[in-house]
Length: 279
Image 1 (cartoon, rainbow, N blue to C red):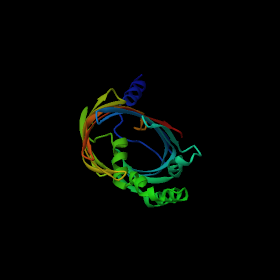
Image 2 (image 1 turned 120 degrees about the vertical axis):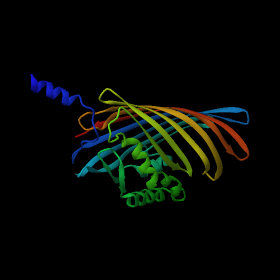
Image 3 (image 1 turned 60 degrees about the vertical axis):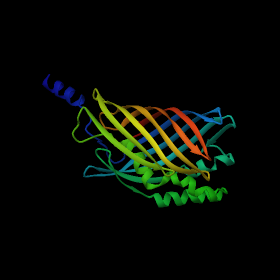
Image 4 (image 1 turned 90 degrees about the vertical axis):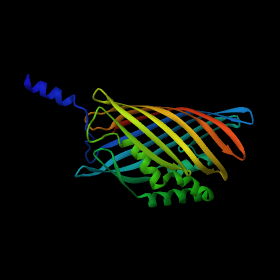
């Protein structure tokens, strides 16, 4: 009876970080939908977007509480519907306009993180981006390569991986706060978040988001002043500490100034990340 009670107590503990081993393989499937409304010259335009990203994450080294994880891109898909028409870009399609996404699949890089999920280092970016650039050039998209490859800058990847994996804090308090800033297209995106445990395998988060600054997109200079909120629910595998599902709801609004016009903008979206252990 005592043994059963001790085993039950051990199983009920919150994970205090990641417990991974070499050979662990996870498939990460991210689906995001967004509804964007912008008012231009008194007319409201609505845009709907849906994206799918599928990646494999494999633990290839583990020593002294530091994990080396190899990522492999499996699929990229974008569906876009606007007053100007609809389009689908899919890495699994042979359509010419899907060439950028085809160039991104089967690409790999590695990163190191500690038990808390802090991203320590990213490796292999030069080799990966060179391979993507070659694929783009072969499909006549060499002139667009720099814009496409901007998404793979080290700072952006580290920030994105941190938001995905840096869930834990050493004190294991019932609640805690974190801030994260990443620069996308020259615009700082700052997220201030508070997290709280719900039971032993769920973390709830509430975040304030701010995007302010000058950017240039498709040759057009813009100034953004956009803020919003995000609600997050993270369900964890208590054995490995790895999330099994992350759901994020976002509501963002503000103004974009471009070509002498002020364009009111609102975005609502939901992102669902499902992580399944393959082996």
